[in-house]
Length: 129
Image (cartoon, rainbow, N blue to C red):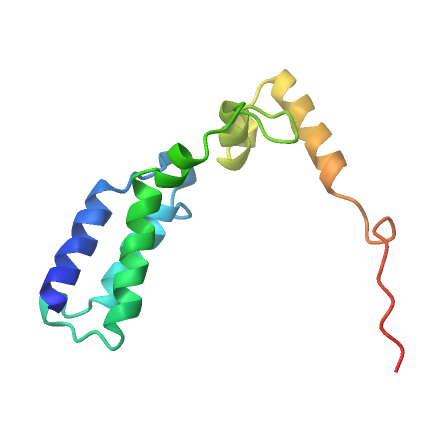
């Protein structure tokens, strides 16, 4: 039975896209590494918790086939920050140097908006005993 699981995970790894802008830190690369570690002996690997393995596969397969994107369509292709998908990909790619001046202005605005110092953030008081 673990041979079937192994083949299913391999197929999922083949289908999972790699983000070339996030070399070494994208989900596709992470998934491939985890499958390699989890199935060290290939088809002969003994799975300690088959139910958990099957659950993990089903969850990843749903993400890969965009089940939730289709079930919960977005009204707009922006976030609460107003950043478009392309701008967000550019900001997350790590290639900030490639941005033109307009994009750098956006980057500065975002950094100012989300990098509040600890003094600005209200702290909760510990409950009294």
